[in-house]
Length: 351
Ligand code: 1DF
Ligand code: MN
Image (cartoon, rainbow, N blue to C red; front, side):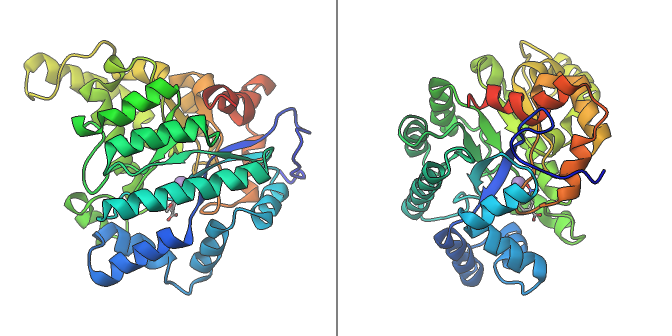
């Protein structure tokens, strides 16, 4: 597994990486200010207290790579054979900001900045719209601006917003705008809110190692069980990290969910039009960000269908040439590999 990594499709497919992060200086400065003035939640202190302040090689290199949307990133993509990157403002976006006007401003300027980079490298960069869910109506308008004026191909929300989840009816304008624009929502992880993070934090398990996935998987389950896809049957929701473990749980989720519905144990748990597993085959898309692991890729393809599993690198957090080679070398038919790396992303992001 030491083949050369080239862009241009020498292996029969382009590589489109679908969960790639950038940051803006003012975003990180806002995080740092919140860490210093005591308004940051525990997760931000843990995550951005590390990346924005640690002198470790990992933190310093990731900060430098996050801020760059120019030649350094293009060179990194060239070196690992990544033809196109689908870029989004890094987690948690502007969602923890308490000053809503500041949150809107930083998100809008990040969107403008990303649009400029996409215009400069139109064959390499594709943008996702950043929003400030603290203001759902503004976010809906920004989704329309992203789709209609900036050329963006979807929207990224970094899980909870100050402990609030998207199944709260207050966020409905965001879903209406998504469906109207016919664009997918990528629910990217964030550190768990203070109400959830305690036992994870004390064990060092709050971040990408585990807490991210648990919290984001729960977020998607909250949306499914409230009936989001019955309300919006055309909506497509993407999650990374091989579905944040939910595909592996589907049998038990459906069994226990149906048992809960029948027994009327919870007021909130209502009958749905489909099983949870069926929604995974009609409305959920997964990427393999952070999970360059053939058994997990094949399992998700088997459970969800091979049209619903896409490649992601998660640059700069997991910039590993060996992982690209491992995914190239999966024991899959050429057409399935092409769907994984290229054509599923083209289809679902409408590239
Ligand atoms: C990390 C990983 C950070 C991912 C991220 O955004 C992120 C990390 C702040 O390793 O701390 O997007 N990730 O998706 O795996
Ligand atoms: Mn990520």
